[in-house]
Image 1 (spheres, one colour):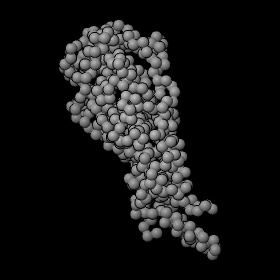
Image 2 (image 1 turned 90 degrees about the horizontal axis):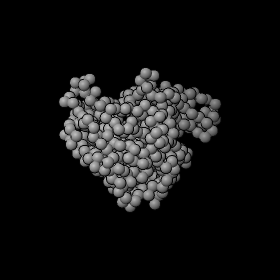
Image 3 (image 1 turned 45 degrees about the vertical axis):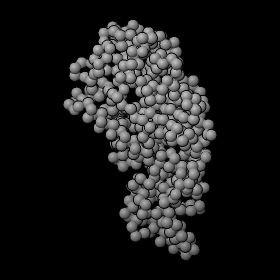
Image 4 (image 1 turned 180 degrees about the vertical axis):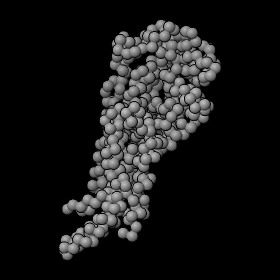
Length: 453
């Protein structure tokens, strides 16, 4: 069996994935979106990263042996604010936003996880976990709030690599009068009549953010599971707090064995920000004619553990590369996935290395292998609208190569020039060399202009 190795954020080492909770079965939990608005480009990166890992796990262990959980946070102050701002019911906002998210991620080739729990469906489990923490002395109730007692967990800070005292000294920490310690965090808070709330032993209220993932992970994956993932912006405090409350509530388990975090995304070399005018949702790009396959390819071109810079130039280059790949694989039945691709992904999800192998397969003229590799990486080029199947540029490349060869003998290049001009007018880049002719459709490709050629 292929050995999968992943960098564990907690140990800061690349470690072998060895499913031990249930041998031969893998459990993975990834923090999903808070559903009050469209997913921005940064939200899409973890969805794509962990989708590739999910595909790899299914390939190695079998589809039925992998349980992938990605949640929806549908109770949150941002959602409450959006409801107050728009006058719309919270349920309508969250339902609509979940639909948007699933549609946009599907456009990027993201498979739906095994389970997609909504936080509001697990309030009872959250209340039970909070009660367990209070009973064990790890949490306390004050003024309708329940807070986790951070100093009761000796390993707090090991994920982020900081001590509690250093965290207090180096960060702004909310100091509320009901806190025993500045670092204690909220597990439950009271709700007014105009806010969502549920009955609990501590009064009508709603859960804090961190407890929801712990409760859902425990309910769906158990005391211990194999992989917990998300963006590295969640490493502290969200994931640090998850570890603390989960290990204290269920000390018989180890919670997640491997913690995996993807780095953040920039746009044109700068942090994505509305004030800088470089803030994009996935839907913005799709509606502006950038295929989801192109977005996914740009993401996969950078290793998940490195900061990723989205640029217009990268998108254009990705479109050209994928067009070349599509010209090779149109109407080709995929063969087996090249073992080199599996090996690259098994080595800490090295997607740039996997893409290099796609280029090698293209150069080796292995169309079935290339088609299989593209499919395995979630790049469904059959859905790219700028390359309709009825247009076979490989035939036109052969025609141009033949015309050029004839012109070399007759010294009459009128036919060659006419064909080149027609292709250029249709938005096709013509590249001629000693090795042959290559035709690459660009972003402005207009297949209608090729009719009759």
